[in-house]
Image 1 (cartoon, rainbow, N blue to C red):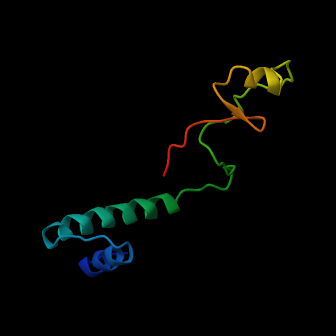
Image 2 (cartoon, rainbow, N blue to C red):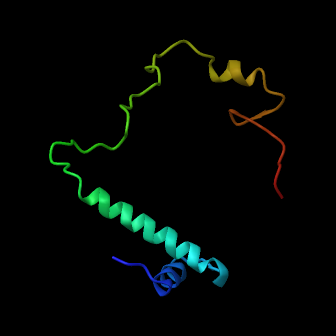
Length: 95
């Protein structure tokens, strides 16, 4: 498959990217190189390769939730500068 300047201009228009005329030759060559590489990848035999979502195994690094004693609402509000209706009252920061 060959890539033409008009192909690059069309793709740039779809992506809403302005490609200056002086850079069009370079982008055309780069895109042609990418397509050539993808064509090489399509020739690989991947019949025995398992599909993966990540290149390396991924596991959860979070600790398990453990219920522990905590402050009651009244104890927490006892530390508040100002409280209202069982909640912390803070100054308004947006108008």
